[in-house]
Amino acid sequence: MPKQSSGVPSQVKPIFDEIVQLINSACRQCLDEECAGAAALLVAALARKRPSPLLKGKRNVWAAGVIFTIARVNFLFDPSVQPSCRPADLAAACGVSQSSASAKARDIERLFGIGPFDRKWTLASKLDDNTMAWLIMIDGLIVDVRTEPRDIQEEAFRLGLIPYLP
Image (cartoon, rainbow, N blue to C red; front, side, top):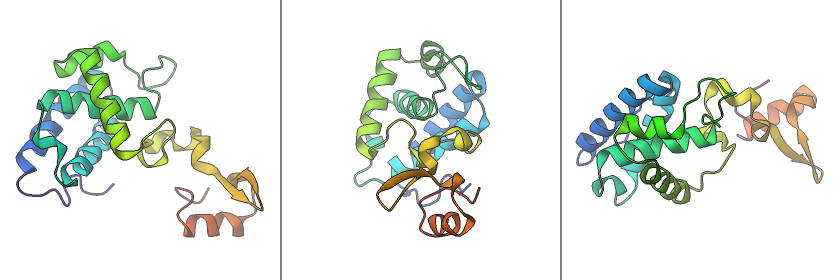
């Protein structure tokens, strides 16, 4: 995993650090370290935006919105998934209302075009279960590349269409 603070502008670095600290605390309470790491990468992406949206708004709302975004992509609000957490508990761990956290998550999702099954924000431990990460188009047909010959898998990986060679 890349260094979480790489490329964070110095003017935003203190805000980034504070939000990541809040995320780490909330994830320790409700989720896990992998979620905290993915959330920190998303905060770094927000910090690099010009102008950074992190310069406005409450830090704990940003933390909650970022964690909600990662949780939504990875279906971590579903109790059958591990780790999982109720949205109300996660919002409470950040000290915000569930509606504030959800609204901020919608803003973040809109800003980056993030949706369910988004491969870029899928946790590494969940990639094998994310069918969307493995679908490619071959001759006009959408196929799961894991069922294709190795040379096709290697080309799909070389082109950045799949996360790793199965």
